[in-house]
Length: 107
Length: 275
Image 1: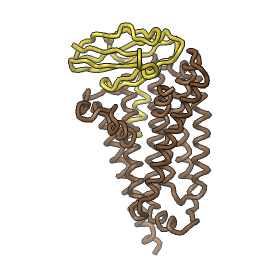
Image 2 (image 1 turned 90 degrees about the vertical axis):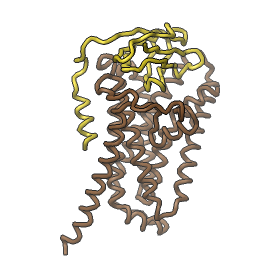
Image 3 (image 1 turned 120 degrees about the vertical axis):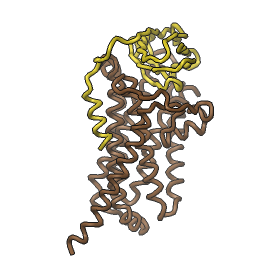
């Protein structure tokens, strides 16, 4: 029951009511993240906007950030991360993991 | 070829796990194969449709549509699993007795089996849509069709082998322990899915993470290791979960146990009322 309630509550929580976010932009081009290293403030919630310019989908994945999201071809996706402790948080594109690699540096 | 095979294997493994545990847990229930098969086919068709709608879904809710979609699917799956488990435990004695006699099956399980069919459908749909997207992406980027089909088939075969092996293993468990084992697996599976649901809601900034992470065992047991990924699939293990995920995990286990106890109590009471 707790879960059901939480779920229903979650569905009805109005979106985008939160104050201005720390926004950071990333692109995917030729199965690579540009830039491949982004510096974000530690201890704060951060909004990543990832622009996939390739004609193929990509899955943004990071065990360290505990995130996973499919990004459709030629489209943008939003992912919230953090608040993070200072440190390095690698991420990769699961569909092209040989080339699509990057790291979030929280400082 | 092995790259795609590995990705498809990883996507299929969770669906295989759900199907095999549910198939084992419903042993002895009439028409269960039919219902599971129905869920499987509906899920495959659904995954193609969802894959086609990816961009539409993704652009909803200010770029967080995918998270909401995944969280909703996981939420329904958790409720179906919970309902199934509560129903099973209240009929457990009956099932264990009946399953011992060859060919006998309990009736009136159809309402409960529709929950199983929905669960199988949603699980296949979620994992399947990602596979379809990935394979379609490969095709558009000019990979050879032979490569794609070979990789996809290998990965899927791996997933099916995993499911069948686990199923056969479960079926060897002595009958007196059988429903306790499958029941425990189902509860942990539900809790793991609830944890994933929380993660999506955090990722979309709908729920606060509470603690990020609550603990970090990535040095001790990384999610990428063989044991870590097996535990991830089986019981929802994560090396650095947020506090909210653990809250969802715990709330799911306690809710299922609470309602199971409630239903059992009710079942024990009702015959005495009649006397």
